Image (cartoon, rainbow, N blue to C red; front, side, top):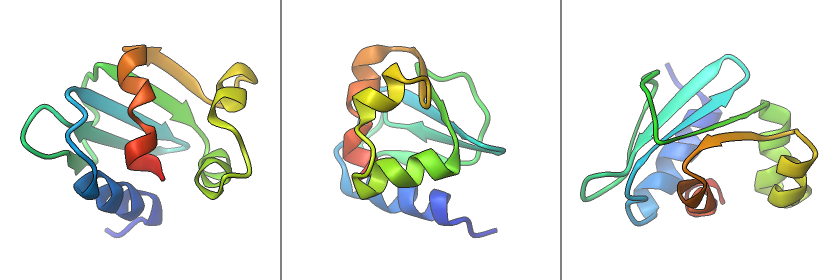
Amino acid sequence: MSNPILDHLQQKANEADPIGGTLKFVIDELTVFVDGNGPKNIVSLSNEEADCTITTSASILQELQSGDLNPMMAVMGGKVKISGDMGLAMKVQSIMG
């Protein structure tokens, strides 16, 4: 099953340095798990416990990726919810771009 959001995250995660933890994106009905504990980031559709969970919608994700929405404003405005390790959340930019 191909999904544009999953494909994009997979590509960016492969290009980025390992994030040093686990991250879960909940985007509408899609859950994407990134395990960055090893030598490279591994992206899957697992719904596992993660060090940091980021919840948003596909439309907000698209605005963030295009640069139309500032990530800090999205979080402060409640359009993006982050729970867990905030240090890890700060590394998300490297696999979102």
